[in-house]
Every structure is written in structure tokens, then in C-alpha cells.
Image 1: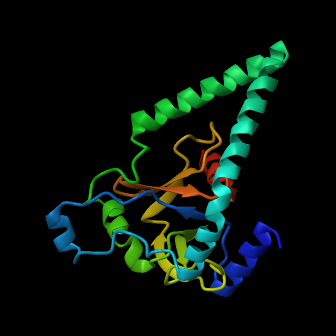
Image 2: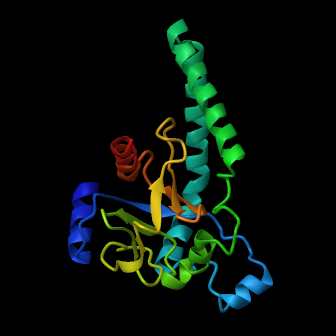
Length: 226
């Protein structure tokens, strides 16, 4: 079944009509100040540990890591050799790509997008982040965009397999309170999206797929609003 087919099955089971959706993760939550933690009743700030089945899989896969690393190194060497044989036009495209990456990285630094949120624990994003793993101890979220709200779904507890099977809605954010934003306005192919709250605070998520359906949905919405 295709990714979109799986998504339709999931949304039907959840009883919602989503215009786009994608699995996403967040970076490590920084340690909040003591008073913030106390006010929030000392919430969980980390996902649950990998289940036993996942740990067994990781152990069994460990011997192959050096092989994979070696193959990746060979691929990089091959790529470098092929680039040296590129035509003038291909080399120009490569340089343009590297320049785009530099501009993207500069934007990330300027806007603080290397952080998981805007840094204000008392803002809406900071308060929502404090409850992230109280909603579910799974390390991923299915982020779904509907006309009325942003929906986050996940298994209640962390799983290593069958995430769609165990998934349920763990949080809802009305469209009047937050919107999805591509901080690069579609200029670069990235996995980054922001949940931007009406008070200006934001929370960064990283999608599994590069320039996912969610990115394209956000881009279409921005063009419609313009």
C-alpha cells in the first residue's frame, strides 16, 4: 500500500478528514527552568525507551553498521569522482546547489531554527512542548492538517512496529490557535515545518519525507491566502 493509501486508512479509522499528513519528530527538549517544571507538574520530557523487540532488532543489526558505513563512504567517493568528470553546466548546477545549502543554513541560524522551539517556556508553543510526551510516550507523531485544526496522532505508548495500528489522536490544536508554516516558503527542499501559535511562538517538527505532502499543502495554502 502506498503512503497516501496508508494515510487514508489511518484518517478513516481516526474519523477525520485530513488534507495532508506526515509522520514527524521533534528534537530533544531542552531542560526547562525549575519553576517552569514545577508549574507544569514535572512533565515527561523524553520519549519512552525502545521496546524490547526494537532493541533486539537494533542488536541484530549492529554487526552490519560497519558494512553500511563502508558502503556509504564508497558512494561518497564515487560521487566525488563523477563530479570531477561533470560537464561545465553540471558543475554550475552543483555550485548553485551548494550555494542554496549555504543560504538555507544561514536562514536556519538567523531565525533560530536549529532549536526545537522559540525558547519562551511561557508561550503557547513552550507550554504545548511541555506536554508533548504526556500525550504519548512514542517518539513520533502523525501530524494531520484539516480545515478546522492541526491533529497529532500516535500510539499512546512507544512501539517498535505497528505504529499505524496502535495510533490514536493525542492532541488537537484549533486552526484559530495555530497554523503550519514552512519557514523557507518552499524555497528549499527540507523536512522542517513550524507549528506557529497565534502569540507568535513556534514549535519545529521534522517530517520523515523530504518536502512532504504537508509541505506542499502549506505551500498551496500560502498561495491561496495571498
